[in-house]
Amino acid sequence: MLVQTDPAYADQLDQRDPLAHFRERFVIADPDLLYLDGNSLGRLPKATQALAKDFIDHQWGERLIRGWNEGWFTLPERVGAKIAQLIGAQPDEVLVAESTSINLFKLAVAALRFGEGRSRIVTDDLNFPSDLYILQGAIDLLDRQHRIDMIASPDGIHGPVAAIQETLDEQVALLTLSHTVFKSGYMYDIAELTAAAHAAGALVLWDLSHSIGAVPVDLNAANVDLAIGCSYKYLNGGPGAPAFLYIRRDLQERLRNPISGWMGHKDLFQFDMNYQPAAGLRKFLTGTQPLASLALIEPGVDLLLEAGMDQLRAKSIAQTEYLIGLYDALLAPLGFSLNTPRDTQQRGSHVSIGHAEGLRIDLALINDLKVLPDFRAPDNLRLGIAPIYTSYRDIYTSVQRIGQAVTDRLYENYADTTPVVT
Ligand SMILES: *Cc1c(COP(=O)(O)O)cnc(C)c1O
Image (tube, rainbow, N blue to C red):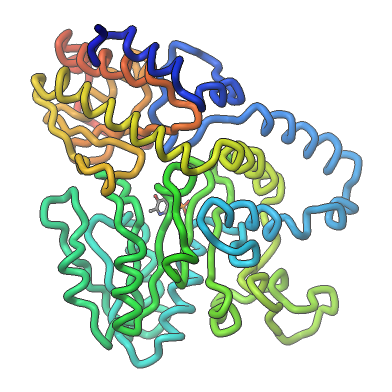
């Protein structure tokens, strides 16, 4: 009988994987390069390659300005409606535009104005630091009437759920958290904390950047107010592709976009001198979007819809379980620690492992061993599972090579200095 640490076991799992064939729909330029960073930048779908050529040669090259009436104008809503299907939202509740950071700024300012008289923003210390920078900027803009209460995780891995629930009171305007946290991969229960925020009369804003495309999310079922997220991670939308925002329908007419611009005007070609917001979500647009990049998000979303989020989640759980099993057998004895929850209910789709020589091991993996994970200070190697294209054999061989970086002392060839992007 095969055991988990047997490479043939990985092959057997791949043979039984009902989603295995989706891997062929992606460009895999070097089959020996093990890619475990789909949670930072997803792979390129082959359909996106074809669309890029069509967009440049035909839509831009031949159709020129006519392209605006042939699909460009409504792209933010059209692609948004598809993304809505991945996160349990209505088609008119999701808009694709701007970056995650800008969307957070717009929605946070709108939410704080909406909650007038309430002065607290509650978040945690596992949140993406840039999200906190954005909130700090929003507070400055609103004349410092608010403060951020950053609730501490008990162990740097798990979310401080009970402490968040306890701190919610009638002074809280906004509870905002990353659904799946970027470092440990801990995943909150959206319904539980949304209900707790609502009980205190606060709005809630979820950052879905590390969830969308890897774990099913049901915003409507949890009655979520606001959400944002990234399209270049598990959605495979391409480097720097625009992000999305979600506003529950009944809130759309009650919130104001703090960066009003012509693309969100109700009658943009009247060139009225006064801003009047468009109906629905469209008013949350500001200016012209990067249309080539926006258009290229769609094939990646189509692939996820075809595969189905429940099937993708089932595979992601099976793969992170498999990875943790290999970690226990092969990496824990080499001085690694597991910095990700063991409970599958509390885990997104990446696994973080720590090591005192984490950065140097990361550099040896990238430069000598053809493994691309990523590194998050102080000692985390993040191993991202993108269930739509990651194979069990990828995971097996990656663990082998991570072990080799330590046993062959390959990391000793590298200095402890961080490159720009890790
Ligand atoms: C990736 C990520 C972002 C990215 O923001 P950009 O505006 O695209 O730079 C924001 N928040 C979280 C939680 C992320 O994981």
